[in-house]
Image (cartoon, rainbow, N blue to C red):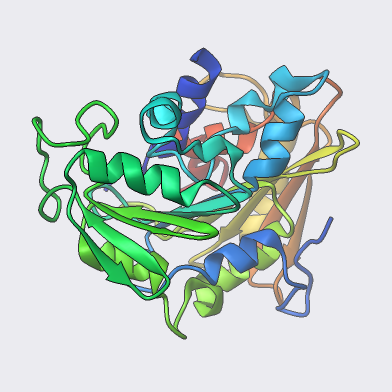
Length: 323
């Protein structure tokens, strides 16, 4: 199974148009940990999670050194990012103006939720004007634009939805949820008590990443038994730390030693750049009760961010781990 490329597509589309885990095995509540609590723990959602502090990333991207943050804008709502301007124009809902977002699962079994203030009435009128059927759901409404996982090229949201990501929608004050199927929508609108925040693997990876403003967490896949968490911690002052977390299938100390050696004299397969050039001054340690290997690297002023996400997508991170 290939690792997903949702976030890379999101960053490309948008370009065009504090805390850390420790040896306690637990960490203070962070935006990432809170976001995991919004998603039910299912076989689908455990495969892949993407999170973004939308408000912070949008603010930084609009600032004086904004270009270095653009690669991170769209994390947490990457299925919607390629058409976010069209959504704002046609549906009166702009994902980039929400506070935070998380998407879980691999296409076509992914689902996402964004939280923050928006004009619920305006969005619901736009959906109703397109003759999308709705049903009352507690304090919100559920909308069904197509059958589960159906790709309807003549549907009411054609052009706004690239595939089936908006087949099921739930609107409510403070949240907007979406999925390709009803079960996926349930996972992010009615997560219940068994959420990803309490999933052992996701909890360790999120604890290792700490208060990341953008992050991706992936479970092991066929051919690569390592679970990964990658993210970027940011401050409003412009300080940035790239973080990569790996849960090894063997002894964590052996993986740590291997990575330390590679960072000294190895090269990334995709670019043939030295690791020391890609992750200058990187530090490697064991965290989460010694079960997770963490790599941290400070980025220089003005340097584009999201390098560890790119390394995950190109499989350079797997190569660094010897997987």
